[in-house]
Length: 569
Image (cartoon, rainbow, N blue to C red; front, side, top):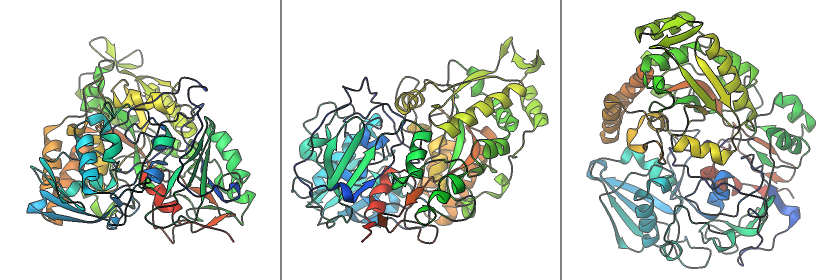
């Protein structure tokens, strides 16, 4: 089952499917080109759900459009971001330009005059201002971690001005990635965070509208009046697969055009099945680009595992891990062991790496360091377990067992950590929605989770920025580990206020150093941007030699990818 690697910190709500009948409905949008099965682009689903829920609310990450990474087919961002290239400028989309002034405290957004909604009305500044104010006033809806403005004005129908109390230019990606909704539709909704919006009623600016919906398959058709021109891909189909194995088999058989799956022995199991048409991002190992840092999130505020609030305990957990074993046994060496405790993703973040955090965590376990850290916090070994005041260090790693590689990693960590003197279990009895709810509301002690962010700063901000977190029981927009550190927060603020690249790097160095000392989450692997494609029916796919967008499952980038495809003649 593929796993989303979204481009910034997100607040994840849930929308659990209660049964097949409740999750199925039919109906499509009246607008759109006539759908033709012969031209359908088939995209693999990635949640492991038993049925889809007909909810197109782009502020509820447990719904269909976000969990299946198809949100931007309907709702679009202000800018497109290539998260594989942190130095690439944003690509203008609904916004033609971002202009910063007043030392990064004021952002003037010039909108694309061509953009219009699927009901034919134009996109105007009121729509953007309304969306911005709605998400920043409701933490659970702020999926991008958009900073709150002190004022939002609309000088004219094509201009939005955001004024901030502090510099926010460093957070431009969060603003750029925000999906925009129509004020006319959403202003009458009393509870937008939890509102269930059937796809047939969704109004967006995107290139596609709903064609048909069932619990087992969802089809989009081209928006006939799309402002960017008629999409060359006329129909998209998202059939349901309930496991990695089922999806991999369909992919190997040529039933799927686009997927983001971890396939064991991918050269033989996938590429070798049809060498002429089955392809990966790159032809040589590790075949997939690294796009995020996979970390063991440790809930530092958990009432169930208070020992995780101790930085020495977190350091000891890190030292006990055999990262190379997980990389080889569970990730088939597609994901390499993390080597920096500073939280950045290598090699794409190498230019921003603080030298003191280079190669400061090892691929193999270090039991001597485990003992040093644990003894420093007053723990002693009793009956093979580290104990303090009669209490062992006990916690449970949660990851859906449908995420077969993550589940393998979780079980490996349980074995490694128990051998090192901890008391650890794993629980895989989650689907994507229930797992997401547990993590974002703080109802967990530990979880292996992919990283977020399109820049080195954002990758660490997602783990460390306490302004994005929430108390246990409330939904957090980021910092799921509930980490709260004054020095880290000061460095984050310094980065956001920095007026030069040198000042930004100095702040980022401090952020990495605090990460390495405090270990708010344990870097484990450099997460692959999972991506397989079959070019029998469509051409124009991103590759290592044409890396125009991150091709792994991301709702921000899938629209941009699909709009670059053309049917084979």
